Length: 427
Image (cartoon, rainbow, N blue to C red):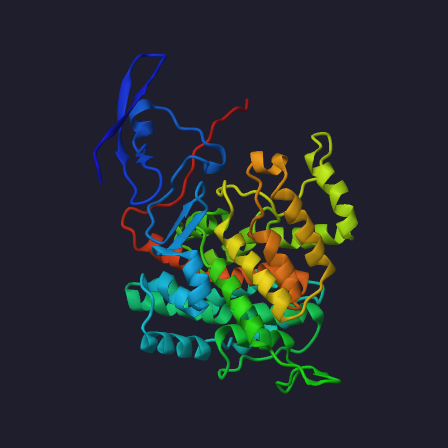
């Protein structure tokens, strides 16, 4: 780290103050203003933390101008196309991709940890059928802190790994139970003979007794392409630097709260329509547009400054280029359409919107590229997943990122309780 300095001049008094500049291995350097108040008697003001780095991290890197995303230095394109979600989980938790033996051990451990306590199942059963799966999921994860209270005080790496692997394994079961509860149908327990992603689809689709739906053509199967597609979606959602839900997890963890309570808070933050719930909004809008021939009219509305209509699934707070996750999902969408012989009206509407937006100067000038939410909802619909399950899918993928970020925070000796300041304008 260089010891270059940044000089701040107070135009009111003429006083000058120096602050260290710290260089990143990738991305912008930062000005260390941790002593700013002590030196100047003033606070900095940054609504939404658009120019503020809240922590140091070794996990995920984003270059929004280039459209680049890396986990532990690995490009997201390589991970999504050439590695499984469990390999990605291992990479995030351990800083390296697993060997074949390490991956096998990791996989088997998650399979065996996938069951939840029967009392927790009863808690989920007590929710009304009308409850949204995200509400049940957040509550279920918070309740996990009661069943594994020993994770409140963790002293070594082995305990952190046990805590992390436990929740990664149980999240798909909790999500599947939450979904089936919302439909008022019996729960399906995990099958340890199935892989992580296939097992989740099985818990969503199976009937009591473990059988899948019977059709006139025979017993329905979970297709390999479906498993691979959902596995890639989990990988693409695994982590995304210091976004709103990750910051929530870190902030709650900073109080000394139980790790699973912090994850529950992250789930609640993710549920917001401006965050993880955005893909539900994309599908709702596609359904509202209704027909391909209606697209031009809605595009015109999106470009009209006097119209409050906003086109969902375009633009991103960080990416000012094509979101690399969206690029991967675009490939996946095309592959699914061919291999599953899909001819979805929603996909046709989405394709028309994408075609116009990528060639329209209005969107190009404003760097409004399709984001991950634009494609993920359409793909999840193609995988026969109901709209209320879109954000829980996000949760399953993101849990490993949250828990890795939490572990990094808790083991960083420089970490302290989150306590932003304010600009008071009241009486």
